[in-house]
Length: 128
Image (cartoon, rainbow, N blue to C red; front, side, top):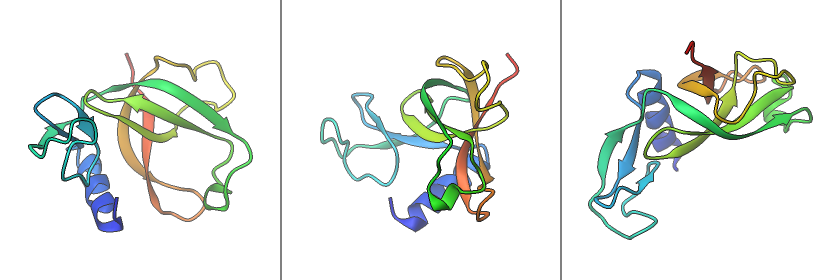
């Protein structure tokens, strides 16, 4: 994903208009794409992400890369949002607590890294 494409995708998420690219077979992918990575179809449509997602897997990071030095400890997670799964940082939970679990329902948004203020995809638990 180019920087401009990634920033446009983050802007869409931040505006509550997150999307995936979906082919007629229902395979989802994240932009930029010209063809479906699974079937090769070039008939891609922009489909909204589900309003909430579910954590599929996660990792608690205690020894971060330099770009996340001031954010640690934090939870990196992969969440399913309908047509796609995406990676983000899970916030609003104790990284070492019991509330971090597979199946947790989350919202998606954009917030800043503590280390450098750059935007990143963030998940937060819903109130369900």
